[in-house]
Amino acid sequence: MAPVNLQHLWKSYDEKQGPIVRNLSLHIADGELISLLGPSGCGKTTTLRMIAGLEFPDAGEIFIGDQNVVPLAAKDRDIALVFQQYALYPHMTVRENLEYPLKIQKLTREEIDRRVNDAAKLLGLTGKMDRKPGELSGGEQQRVALGRAIVRRPKVFLMDEPLSNLDAILRVQMRSHLKALQRETGVTTVIVTHDQSEAMSMSDRIAVMNQGIIQQIGDPDHIYQHPANTFVAGFIGDPPMNLMPGERTGDGIVVDGSWRIHAPADLPPGPITVGARPENIRLSLTEREDWHPMTVYISEPQGSETIVNLRLGEEFIRVVTEPEIRPGPNETVWVNLERGALRLFDATTGQAI
Amino acid sequence: MSELQVAPPPIRKQAYSSRTRWLTNLGLLLVILFFALPFLWIVAAAFDNDAGKFVPWPNEPTLDNFRYLFDERDVAHALRNSLLVSISAMTIATVLASLAGFALSRLRFRYKIYAVYAVLLLYAIPIAATMVAIYDLADRLDLIDTFYGLILAQTAMILPFLIWLMKGFFDGLPRYLDEAAAIDGRSTWRAWWDILMPLSKTGLAITAGFAFTAAWSEVLLVIIMITQQDKATLPLQFFFAAEGRGNAEVTAALGVLYLAPVVLLFLFLRRWMVRSLISSTRGL
Image (cartoon, rainbow over all chains, first blue to last red; front, side, top):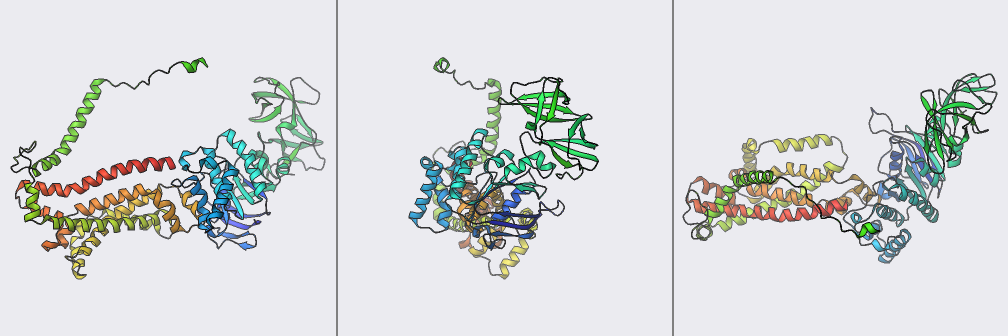
């Protein structure tokens, strides 16, 4: 177990394409579970592979504990990596797969058996030890992949989209298992994911990445409540934060032509981006004083709630409301913003104000 | 629940019209006959004393032709020479092709793409064009009339294609498998041995099969490099027998001996291939 420290990492695959990771620095505390979250191509997997030793950084240092591991090959870094495709050895049984890293470490037979059996019990694989990976379900293969990481007792767990190949129900179940497993073992863990709800539910901290740069780092609540810029605001949350172009006027901000929103008085005049979470916008089917009328595009019933899509110029905003409120297309509804729920962003840079 | 108690209807097969099936079968039969007739003629003639121009099957099957070959022409010696040369060339070429194929598939080094193209170019060069050079080189190196000279030349000749073949098999194995082995603590070459080699058994078998067949049926290099009768391999004997327009039945018997290992190898490989293909696709 050890902290991981990334310092000014750069990585390009192709000079024409430009760097895929740009000057990335990140400190991961000992025993922490951190997610690298971002859209595909944002550099999160490349960052993980550099920590693993499968890619070599163009510049920068990677410390695991006190040791700079950049000169070390993957095999000498004492890390375990769970691959997106699990990467189980197809010609070996489950037991042989789990034993493989331990045999390389030349542990005694008793120690290997003890660790493998412990892991099998922990992951519920006891009855499957003599099967080949091809004879297992996706969820079982995933557990074998986790087991092969656990038996190592490495300094760091690295996981590349570990749950993305599971079906939806299993994915949600494995989230909680994975989190509990990490708590139990206390091993520093880096998870790469593009699924914001996965990152939200499992992580101690989330690093949101885009275009090779960490956009924001913090605990899930902070990132959800106080996105650092419009990218993070638009990436986190399901549905994500509504971002509406507004105009700063005398005593507030005007959105959608006539929707007047109260705002702090010390803002400079000019265009501004207004952010509001879908659950922070109230919706009424009847007219109310000072509420803003909008036209319904469509309603999406979710069982426990309804997501109402409203027209805002050419765009839409989404409002989460009670399940029984289901306005039809082209109906007029009235909306109002909850106090304190307003987030403001610079209209040109997208940075939070 | 009541629906479960109803017996399912029998599985219905897609019905082709019988005329289509007839025509298809007839067409296939013609193709098979076209390719199989010379083969059948050789087999039939080999066991006959007096084969006419067209032999459906010998009237009195006999082993006289084979007896003559073994007693008078010492074909056993040539058979032994051929097996020695072909198996040696097969073994060396398969090992080298596997190593080179792995390197071209997996390792990162400068100018790798040129190495790949060079291998492909070597494969495309017709061996006959280099005949004089090969003879000259073999002569200077005192490799004429030696088995290791012939093995070396044949290995070199078949290697480019085999490297290309093995590279293809390794390319087909996902890269995350060797990465997983690296993470688990294995060096590149141990990962090749532990993970990629067991998974490319099919590829190795097919490569070895190609290597053996190529070396076995190779005539040109043998003609260039072997002059002594006691070093002659089977294709050389066969070549002379066919050239002399001697006894057709004896030539046919020689042909059967020449064909037999290749046919056996194919039958063996075919079964093996099906088995390993099933297990490897299941495993991946």
